Length: 389
Image 1 (cartoon, rainbow, N blue to C red):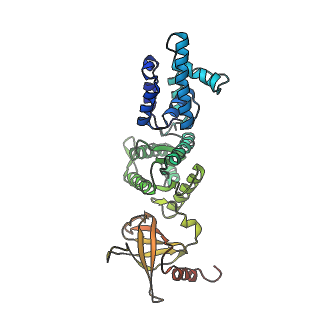
Image 2 (cartoon, one colour):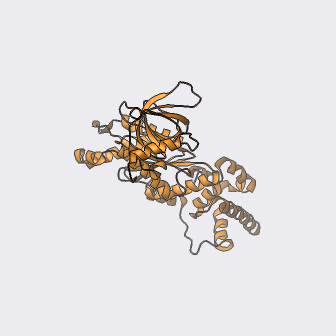
Image 3 (cartoon, one colour):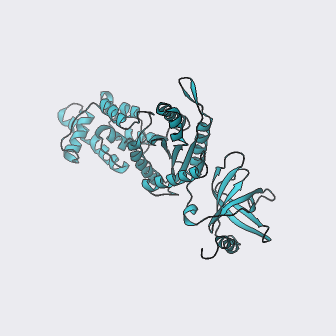
């Protein structure tokens, strides 16, 4: 699986007709500054279809260039790059037992077809599995986050039952096009299966993933699906997001976390974006509506008036009339008129998603460990839980 170097760039760099002009290692060191440290792994995969990590690939590439010089000196003529590569992998660093030569353009086209979803033109599940592992490896190496969006078309079965599977295929193709239009060049847009899609967002943290997901959700919501000039109506999508390494350390875990967030988005009424949030797993939540004011500690008087939706020992879900800054430290003042209680606690906004309609946003908040009234808040939650909880 290729990394960050485009197939066109690889064909140009490895053109045998004038490769002697690019045979010096200093040339490739300059190219590495342009294409990144995945350059040599991309080159060797293009030439051999063997996967290497960047450090291994760099060593093999230097040896191949040296072997080409040696063979050219012995034979008194320029030796083809691929001849030197075969000699290297057959004799110096054996990796081939019975190599077969194939025209690279034919091979690339065949491989591309095996990785494409025929209906939508997106990459398929096989590509997704391979590229997610590579992007997480790159994320760990560069110490940059990588996010995953799981996207599901809402009520797609009911649509198929009403309009037929051919109309359903039209919706899948047009949804795929909307997602590609809303994505960056570096993002990987794939059909995960059925009416579910997956987007891999390299170098994207939680905030960027939420912005991309919201942009995508709105774009689908605003799209009129058409079939040969006949309007089919509008559909929506639900989206779950998760981020490496914040939420998960492996590809399998990241998929699981994004799937869990997608389930929450569906459970909240669909047409929503929800982020994975560890607090949802650690603490049982109890439905409890209390008036609440939320403000940044330094903003005197600039408070948002809303209410709780549910509470737990570790945090609360807050219904806000407007958006808040995710990640911000907030002073949250709860009021319980029945108990004559005003309870100020320090929280941090972990995630938010629109409630739908004109009701504002649901904001997930975690209780900060240095909050002065944490014990009293937890006593309030314990009281809600009842005896034995």
